[in-house]
Image (cartoon, rainbow, N blue to C red; front, side, top):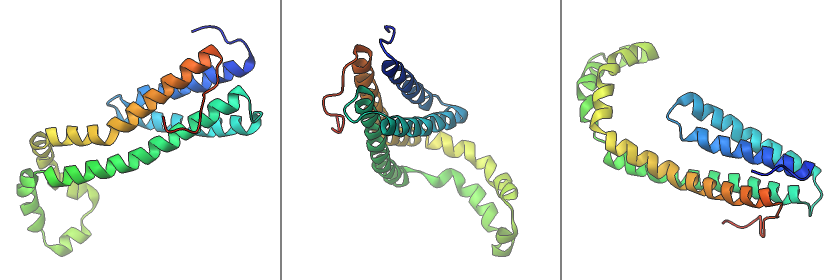
Length: 180
């Protein structure tokens, strides 16, 4: 990556670095990485809105901030639809058979006992069945995750590389409000 020519380009480098780190963190299989990614994406959205507001309307920074903000909102919209599709797929394909022994134990407790039961007690009863449930439905869960996250992740990656390559060269995005 070349050294920034002016302070505006340095701002763009920093914003795109945060964008790239956010994308990289969201694919790691750790809850803490996913939470950090969500925090970074929120900070990215706030920073992009702030920089867009401070920048001149036809400037390089304004152009790229519009592009980034639009990228995040479109990806959020995609995520909504892909999560609905993944949920529909998952609920049609999940085999609940592994939970039958635990369900029998829970239903044998009676309604009053279930209502009085805390989360910890309920988890203790259900815990022996969780590993079997995941093993039985592993492929379904993996496909559901791919359905839910695949398209938004590919979209964000595409928009990141498109914007970053233009920012490194000091160029504007031709149509920052386009979907692609």
